[in-house]
Image (cartoon, rainbow, N blue to C red; front, top):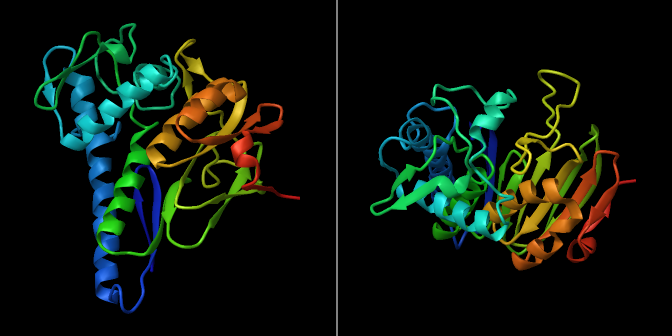
Length: 296
């Protein structure tokens, strides 16, 4: 069974398979519907664009009063805090004002931005949060991966034996077969660059943006380097393979900012990466080399 729905600012596709003695056709449909429901909930809670999302309520009010959020939003913020500290601040969700200034996110009326990073987020009891400075969070670098992981967990809980969830290139799969994911070249998206094998793993990519419905031209990466508060230009794209899609999604932002210098951090998370420089040079970690098949 294969289904697709517009969610998370992209199309989310779910492929699921079961056997006659393990999961009936009706149960498979229910499993896929439940997985989409989990993704839709993440969208409603963590979208920067939705005015009533948990994220928008935080950005609008947390600098003046504590804001209570859904447990899933709180869980993502806790993971973001751990990643912020593990990466010495290179993974920083407090870049909403910077992305809006560069035209990469809508300029909501969250009030005047102040200098600050994720350390300004105060974690209070009862899934409540406050901001010590008027920052604006953007969870686009982690929420999509979290949504994919939730969908995978739902499918497993429903007894599905083999599945793939793809949210615009951030994806995860499980089952007996190895999946090969084809990656477009970030400098020429009309051609394939390579295929990467995943085996009950996740894969995420960040890099130059390409929307064939709007323009034949590439746009630069929508990744902010927290050290400069500017869009990353040194590297064109990064792809990370990791045990979870949340980790893969988050680490692409670090790798596209740091390149091969992020190798130790990738080892810490049992992840591998492929990075392409703005000049088109390709480098990859040793643990990914056997799984990559470069296109001719």
